[in-house]
Length: 337
Image (cartoon, rainbow, N blue to C red; front, side, top):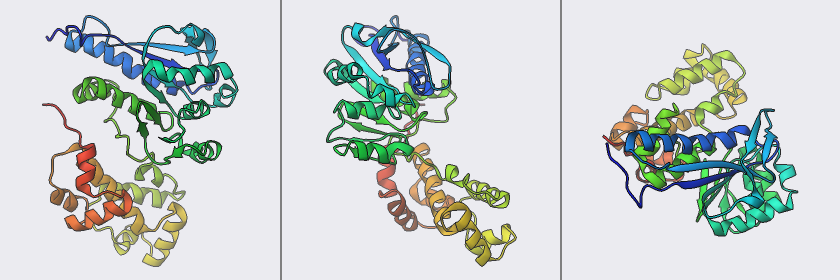
């Protein structure tokens, strides 16, 4: 067993800023990542001090109700937070509207940038950072339902509607709810490497950490928009068989419909043509293989139904605005042996 020694073995202080009616997963999800990482570093790396210390702070110490009705406890009031902080996270939730009117909380946030290595928001916590003026001139994201409102309310912020999380210097903003876990895993990877982040993701029974540039929506999520069961069944089948013949004629036969009627029904149910849906799904299947495997681009193009490398490249540029090689360079998961 490796025993960590100074200066590596030090405790990083992680503080979550919360408020009444905050979203509970915004708070507990990221903190669980850091808490689980501290246990893993102790058990597997022999760290004699916790890798992370986590705490919840609020305008006042003590219990508060989250938006689900469950209660959490703030360890201390923001006025009593002393000393340097490694990472500050700001929760979101329906209570954000009231928190925006808490001028002491906003002023505390405004001054916190100087005393922390990283300042992060989860979901609509981005509104609190924006209200404090900390996102002016920067790119940021939030829950997809709130992106337009964030852009309208704070025009100095460049709002990105698609990514899971966005980094702008020492400030990080993440999309809604569970995206805070993805952000926490990314911060963990920055601190202690990919092996630790993947180990913690496995401990949390997460398939893998989603890269920050990944879309808030997968094609599989969009398939749930179909109301008719035959269309939903077909969409699930397509998702499992990206390399099959997915021409309109072929999938219309599987749905026992004429190609013309099938195309009309599909657009009405799904909001895109069958061809657009198939291309998006194949891009997503190829994207995951580029992230997770060492397979060649030609092999992935064939397996995912593109046929040729060039066809896949054109589809990636249309859909993700980058070629497959650039996507792999940025997001490939280099798993340790």
